[in-house]
Image (cartoon, rainbow, N blue to C red; front, side):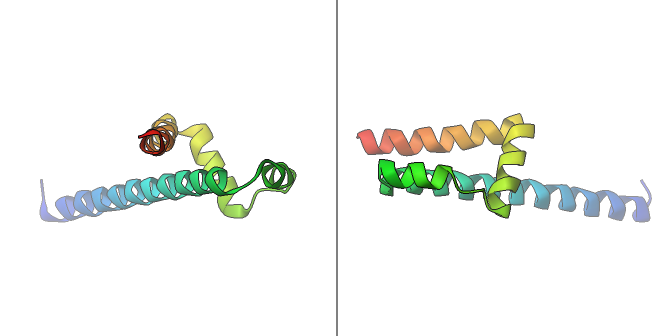
Length: 88
């Protein structure tokens, strides 16, 4: 592999790695928000919040979870781990 090609491959790999890390952070933040929401809100508050339109960040997170099975699995796993910790 020539030096310029190697640089392009390296930069591409770093961009992909950064995107994956950012996606992981987004999934983690979304899961933490859901966990906190259901731990602290009353049923009446949840009912009121359900009628509110989602924020831009929530829309992005929902689209990611709809279209990425791995992100969906990570999201559900994080919520289930939190639930298991509460039961202990």
